[in-house]
Length: 294
Ligand code: OGA
Ligand code: MN
Image (cartoon, rainbow, N blue to C red; front, side, top):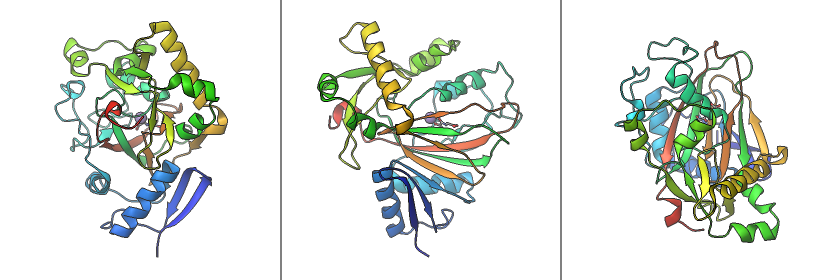
């Protein structure tokens, strides 16, 4: 059986069926999935059964993988999962107990509730994120996605013109700081210094222009902080109008792939005393956005 594509909207969010991702990936299927990601930016596979190793193996067909090894933010805590390529997006601690309300990892993880794009705070940011659901809570805990290419297209021409050449500074500490989560060690803070990223970029897979903004973006370089921050807030507000947003309601066995280069996403609330075990693998972009097409 060959793979079938069911778009949710003409250019955003598609469901793919007819493939078992735990099996070796055929070149033609890889190419079809890549083409679907390039066009729709977010794709969903249901009813998959993937070990951590299989999830990493699958992701490796789409680019080099971001690893958490050697990252100061991950030192000194007990890890639940063995592989450094997997980001633990669950609300579980190293012993698989639900995180305590004030635990450092829980407070850090809550920043996923802000609209963001993964790893824009790294010089070479994230490309594709692949999030797989092992355990889903009984209610809540959707993930929402915003289409930043459609949002860019809908901007007035004068605004598009104003945005030309603008560069924002992104920092993970800015997104955490918005939630009052600031208790990081000097070593942690030094390990992830702020980085510049373009506000508008060309999405490599589709050659369409897209906004590139996130909760990590703190201000615009060369503009008073307050003006830049207001501009970024306006752009995020514009891009997250319901007409650009699609919510994914998780079922166990779902794998969702999104392209961080042209989308934002955020987690929605759920009862965090209930287990939600999602695990993510993210591929690396090829370079800083400053070294890629505007
Ligand atoms: C992520 C993320 C949102 C969620 O995995 O990068 O932001 O709903 N997840 O867990
Ligand atoms: Mn994320």
